[in-house]
Length: 426
Image: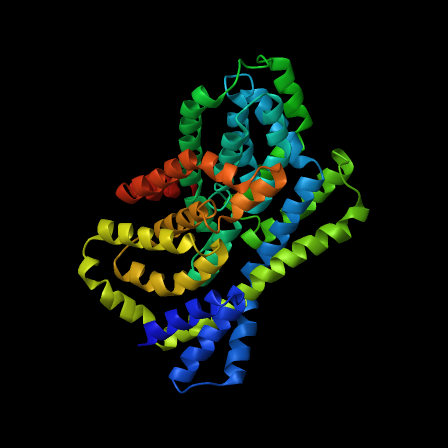
């Protein structure tokens, strides 16, 4: 009965248009009332304690780093390096987008911010080179899905807090799956570019141009080295890494690339604060629901429902991935993570599935949800920034959505592709 009340109250509140954060609070109130345990003080205490979490401080700082990076010209320098490396091959600008997405993902960890930066810089280049714009926009949308997997992925911070797992270990577990996702995009683009690419390459490879691009972008390229290297060596925690990323990005943008001034900071701080506050409100509200989910023993009820599949880890993982995929088509990434994590994680641990492996698979699934209609947050970002209709972006995105979904289920079949490499990094 508690599972029914949880689902009906949550889905009903969202169905009438209530924001996700408030829908989670309504869900919490409904459960408290059913359990004859309604107390406004307990509700308020859990709401406050939900946001009072040191690792969550990484979110506003990574958001700020992304804003500074886009404003200060760091994104543009990264695209120039990628263009010098692979821009000369047939369909080269597609590979440029993928390489640039990998580098950007290792700096900001925000799918929306990285996608906006890529679309703003690369789509005009693709238009000028007579690329199929819809297919190009679809590729950039698919490339934006890498950010929630590679360190320092902000969604992994949310998952780590909700699941009470080491965020640093989650970061390093995501490296190889993120690279495999990028490889799937490279292979897919190679096939679709044969049909959609309109002409011969417009440039030839130049070692001099590459060295010049690397020299100009050296500070931008040092950012992921500083962030990931600092966490690997234990110099700072993921939260401190976010602060370092924001400060270094600011100094590089102001004093080296001179793409922004200190006077731009109030606007960037306001933008980052608005985005972060909406995420933090959802986090706080989700902690109320998570506490009541535990009190109502909903994980045990879900485990009992899945009992027939508990002895088969492969089948259980496949079923969970299908479930998360279905939810991801209707909900954005952060709400999906915060709603499902406290329900599913006890089941995962009881079944003996590696929680870090599951965390990366769960996040990969949610990342794919960012380009899955009808919600598709990243699709909307690409559409608005590149000024391409949403229908056109969706049509161009399908090959890359299929490729990334195939990678996800490949890793379900072969979990060691995630688990073994993670031991090399951590």
